Structure formats: structure tokens, C-alpha cells
Image (tube, rainbow, N blue to C red; front, side, top):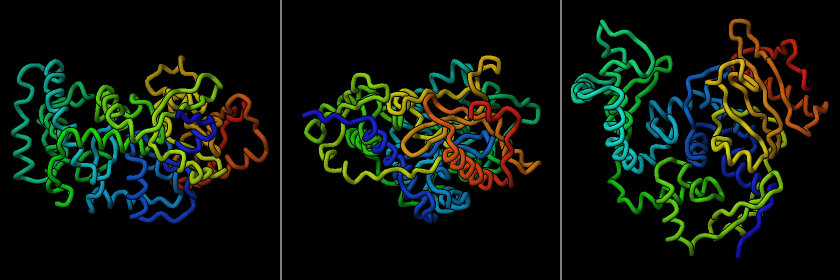
Length: 398
């Protein structure tokens, strides 16, 4: 029997699974941070620091007691987290490293084929040399290996050893030991991750089962395409086959969209109905999300569940932008209610708000503005500035 899930119930479930329903002021600590990242799956890493880098803001939006030094320790000292790829560069629990070995093998063949078209024949000549240099000499930055006459540029102009480092990292032969001014420092995997994370290889069927099962746990409900896309570890066909094989463990659910249209057929685990009563309501406070927050990573799912259209406009020419270069979604309770364009002016000590937009039918009431001001004050403190400054015209839609 198919369960029809209301849109409000669906939003509440997904928010809880993505760590946005726990009390944001509860003391987190380092162990709690590791558990949080484990529960949501991964945290995307991005270099843009308009206010704060994405991985820090993603974690802060879930718990305001988050400390950057705890993340650094888990990555660089304890080895309980590692950096590699999901759909993009991410921080991932090292307990999952053994499953990533399947991705590494897949990437190995794909990268060689794809990068040969980019770099030309013989581009991989530096691979063995670079690996041997790290094995014998220890951790390196890309610049440590660059030839003196190489002119720096974007990814299309990587020097041969930089290409080798990225290949070795993307295929699990080296790992990121730490970062210096956000530059990757590479070392052998066995010197970065503790021995207990070098588990025996997982056979393919068990890997697919873990990838699909763990994705569905973190999504709450999903189509086979959404299951495949969560980690970007398995194909949609593999996820579809997994659903067919595990029908007895699953329950068909229909998810009502925000626009009141036709419910979307999805899958959930068979014990799904029993769990509904335990799903907490998210905090009523208003929170600023990173543009790379996992809640909104799947833009189509975001639009269906929240009625919220969001696209990051970094690569859109300025005259064609609808909103701005780096605009942050606003979450209030279980609703995405607006977006804000702001930037931390660290020299001036202010968080500068350039523009605020509320979603249609969302009123800029006094209470809502107070909640926004309180959140902006928290974000400003986290970003290391003292005051919030509203620039001229910022409140035009308020």
C-alpha cells in the first residue's frame, strides 16, 4: 500500500535527515561534529569565502557551537575524515573510505580516457615520478613540484606534476593530509588515514547495497535517481536494480509537491510509517544556508519540496544575474523564505548586506525581521566581523 505524504511532512522528514532539526545551540564538540557529518553523509568543500567557506557555513547553520578547529583536528590529526569527491569535492567520514575504493577504480579508467583528450598523449608520464617523490620525500604541495619555467593558470594549464597529483588524489593513491592557505598538501593514503580505516575491499554487490541503503537513510524518501545522485557512487541503473531486488524492505510512498501538483512516486524503508511520529519539528529560528548546503544540492528536489527555485549565479555574467554573485538561501522553520546577498568586509569589520529578497507571500513582519537580524549577528560573529551593515537599497523588498 502506498503512503501519501503531505508536503509539510516531507519537508520535516528531509530537514531532520539532513541535520537541520536538532537544537542549534546544543554543545556539539569534536565527537558530535564527527557524528553530525556521518549522519548527513558529507560536507561540500568550496574555496569561496564571501562570508565564510561553504564547509564551515554548512556546519555552523546546523549548530552554532561548531568550531573550525574541531574539523581541522578530525581531518589533519585524527584522520577520521577525508577529502575526496561525491558530486564535488567534499569532507567524508573515513569510515566510508573502503567504499570509495570502488569510485577510485572507476575514476582511474575514466580520468585516463578523459584527460588524454585534454592533455594529449603521454600526459601521464609524471604519475609514477610524482608518487615516488611523495613516497620517499613526504607530503607536498603542488607548487613544490612545479618547474621554474611553468606559467601558472587555471585547471587547463596545470603543470604535469599538478595533473599527476590530482590524478593520484582522485583515484585514491594519495590523500589530502592538510591544507595551507586552502592549498592541498598531498601525502600517501597510508600516512593520512589511521590503519583501522584501511579495511579489506568490499565486493561490488555489498558496495552497491551500502551506497543505495545509506543514501536512502539520509534522504528519508527518494526515487532511484535521487538515490544514485546522493553520493554519486552508483549509476541510476544500479540504483534501480537495487530497488527491485530489495522490494520487500521498501515501501512505496507518494510525496505531495509544494505546488499542489501530482504526488511524486518514491521509495522509503518499510518501517517508514513507524518513524513518522519521531520526526522533530525544526527550530523556528531563521537561518542562513550556504549555496552548497546539502539540503538544496538537488535543485529539482528543492523546488518540488519547498517551492523554491535556486541557482547559484557565480558563472552567470553580471548583467544576466537574477539575484547576485553569491546569494544565500534563508531557512525559517521548515520553509525556505527568502535569499540574501551579503559579504564580510573583514578590513572594515562589517557584514555588508547588499540586498534582501523574500519569497512570494512571505511577509517582512517585524518578528521575521528580528529573527533575521539575530541570525545575521550570529553569522557576523562567526565570520569574524563585529557589525551588520545594511547598504543602501538592501531593504527594498523588505
